[in-house]
Amino acid sequence: ERIDYLEQLLGDSADKHAKELQDLKEAHAKFMAAHGKQAKDVDALKALHQHHATMGERLDYLETLLGDSADKHAQELEALKAAHAKHTDAFAKHASDVGAMAAHHATVAERLEYVEKLLGDSADKHAQ
Image 1: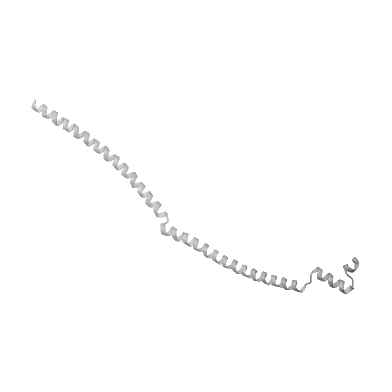
Image 2: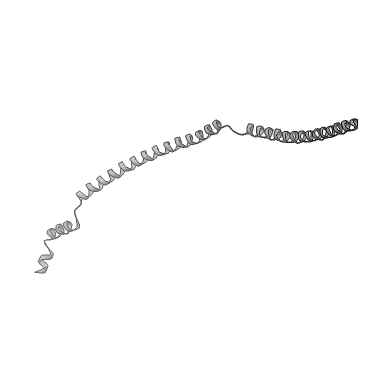
């Protein structure tokens, strides 16, 4: 009886240990599968990272783009300012020329009066 009891006790223990060992093997297999998937994901991320520009490279590229554009705009702005100044000077000269011409030209009323005096005839004489 005692031996049967010990065998039963040891048998239960051996069965428990076998089941626990099987559970551990299954858990280990799941862990290894998950670890393998994560390792593949990490490798894929590393590959993407190698093809991806760093933040510094991206910033340098943008600064180059914007810098070139800013330089071009500054040159164009200076050219426009110079052209505007040239047109302003030409307009001022034209305005003074027109003013000088207007000073030398008589008005229509003045010209008519001159012609009437020259002919000795006026609208006032005809009215009488």
